Each structure stands twice: as C-alpha cells, then as structure tokens.
Amino acid sequence: MRTPTFPRTDTLTARALMRLLTGQQFTHRDFQNETASYRLSGYIEQLRNRHGWTIETKEETAPTSDPTGRAATYGRYLIELESLKTLRAELGERMSKFIEAVKRFEARGKS
Image (cartoon, rainbow, N blue to C red):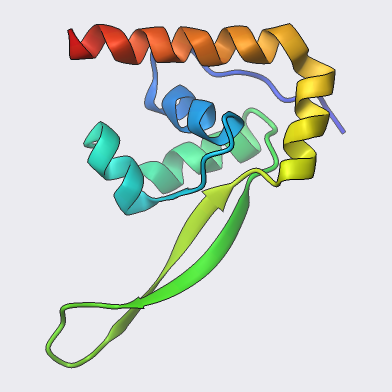
C-alpha cells in the first residue's frame, strides 16, 4: 500500500481531507453548508484515486420534503478510527502540519 499524498492546502479537496483527518464524518449537505461547494463526491474521488486515501462511505436514508413521501439515500464520508490511528502513527507531524495549514487557510477567509 502506498503512502497517501496531501493535496494543496488552498483547495476544497484539502478542506474535505482536513475534516476527515480530524475525525469528522459528513455528508454532501454538511460540506456544502460549510464551503458552498456542490462537488464533494468529486473531491472524495480525488482523495481516493489521485492521493491514495482510504475513505469509507456509509449509506444513509432519510425522508425528503417531497409530497410523494420519497426517501433519499446519500453517503456519509469518514476515515475509520483505526485507520486514523495508523495514519497518525505513520504520518505524524506531516499530518498535523497539513491540518493546521488548511485551518489557517479557512480562517483567512473568515476575517
């Protein structure tokens, strides 16, 4: 298994990865509410296939406001806790520096 790589810290791909590496589990809607981006599945695909991260998708179903009573099935993205522990042990300081750099990038947009 190859060591995963980090995307540039000023990208939406990095913002998704930072959340995953800090143990967050989120859906497209969660990410959209935080970043105003409609492309989470594309960023997850980049993280999996271009950067080599093992990201799980847990399917969930919830009712919609559709008058027909339709339910929607969607994915919740996460990195399993055991995998996170292994990543922290293997990547250590690199992972911490990446997380902090992405947080700094996001904070600049809020000032």
